Image (cartoon, rainbow, N blue to C red; front, side, top):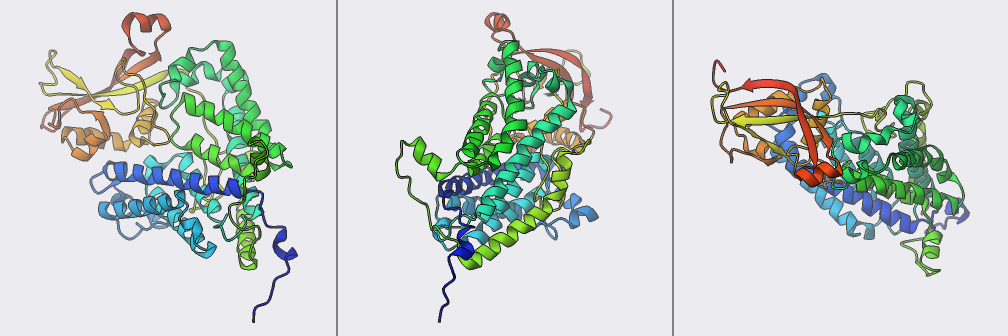
Length: 487
């Protein structure tokens, strides 16, 4: 005998006007998980694998590592890593296609949480190569979005609003860290430099950098408006919340157009759709009936789950909330090992000059003044002055990003010495991380690293030389090193 549950018990929880938002959130976050897992397959073994630059097995000897929630806590192998990553990629693809959403919610939620935990397992052993704010962001987003449920339930409105709280922390946190961190954000000059000095420029970055200074000041003002004022309106009634979401989406698209920030901008765009209601979609489509994706009510059992999860996440929100208004605000900080309800922020300070580490090898005697040195080409970071920067985001080139930090004087760079060793060994997986191996897979006799100052060429310089970059040598970072004794 079944007992019917009064509708009023769960009616308040049904976010039935956010079914399109749910589709975008679930499929969009899953698509970025797919990118992240493929990135792990392609890069993790060479960077962190059995023969990597920072081997996971060595990391797991530390007590700190053994406390992390990860499938690799007791055993790591490159084969297991690939199995984890490909499994996560396959499940992510099924969510992107909408297959898993056809199953009951009690199936959908565990599947999405499996995707989340598989990636969390990778992040928690990724060390400095996974020490980016958007790693915590995708972990938090995956956990929360999982509880939007499948088509047999309406999306719980408390989960929808928690995603807005995530966007608020992401955007407002980034705005506050800028205002506290660097005078150039306060005097509106930050973008005189940022397009040129950002970690990985894209094809449009030089054009953006060469725009008039008045435009760069407008950009900074727009950034402050979008990050410090607009996020508050995510919690306003419709259509105000949708307008706030649209403003943030547009500003993020400008960042997509002008730089390579892995999936940071893309996942922010996806999460912003938590503020856009089905009614607004209908208005945008000229009053068309957009329909509903799934049920319009929340089953009682799932209402209990959704409320419990919301309460759990709200309790975890106190440290990041306090951090937002702290004088010494933390940027991209996790307050628990599960990377849930984190503090975010980016570019609290702006680099005003661009330095690049150029790695070279030679087949000649490295101490012969006539030795011919050949440059190793990286996929994303600037090298050859004539090469136009490429677009890679949302794909994440981890080695290239760490090379940018190295040029800034990063002290946490033991991996770089190992990189030079792997180049001396002509290690195949390491060479695959690069765009160009000047020795065609053969081992060089010696390698070295030099430091250069880079800047974008002016329009006149580009017409005269064809160069995108102008570079000048600053000094030697690593003198010639060789595997041969005495050299």
